[in-house]
Length: 390
Ligand SMILES: O=C(O)CC1=CCC(=O)O1
Image (cartoon, rainbow, N blue to C red):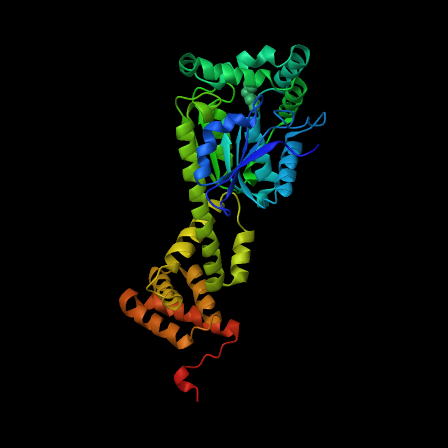
């Protein structure tokens, strides 16, 4: 398949992050017109689904994974190393698949009005058969009836007619092949592998993918945030464009700040505790512990350890004093060893432990001295006072 049809809306600067937008069954990239204002902060890459708009037909039997591969091919063609991805409905399935299979290309995910499994496969095979027999115009009215709430349909007849035309103009074979891909789609067992920050948005009145579908995604993606919008059905990005844009903008820009804090935190953590410890900790991270690892890396190491006014040596000694006072042996041992490895003089650590004994108790410092003595022996550092050295 040749590259997916797309358009690019430049962002505020040449180095603005890219946000790739992938729409729903029966749409063209024009469904994202209400999202153009996101270009205030992002470069937008609007993509037509395979077999939709100006994109070529996918091969018969194509899967959502194949569609994700064609998005990666488009990113390659445009020299985009990584991008945020927002997808609605089938577009949200492609966004999930990108985050599962190509995490290095995905900075943040927005999963809009989508699902890990869109109902029974037969309903999609039936719909594929209907459009092959009667064309997309046969189903356009019913589809758009699920896109918007009854109130929106009543208040906006011209807009609704335009969206109905969009569905009716979709190539029937392209639509049918996407229905067949949806019939096979089931990401439920893989959602735990998503590590990109993920914003999940649903419409409270969505009959196609009701909120329990988004709740399931949010429950299984450890790094997710869920927002259900009251006055929205399946295409919340149109009916609640302002709220959706604000959620996306806040989340993805926060993600940028979070990822900068995470990167700085990782560098600090490695410099203070050493690569071997951090590598072990990263390798031991599970879906259950990941939110905590993210929190300490960003907040403790990325923020507090880098505040001005107290340098890292001071913070090391303070940490040793505090851990001695609270009697947390595991962390104390780790920080004493890290400090010694980084060249902090044993005398200085000894002074801190002596001082701590006065204010926090002799037994705790006694234990800390024992840990320090063992660490010196293990690390092969001479157990002599500076005063003893000629
Ligand atoms: O067309 C529908 O009924 C709703 C829908 C499911 C997948 C998609 O993209 O739209």
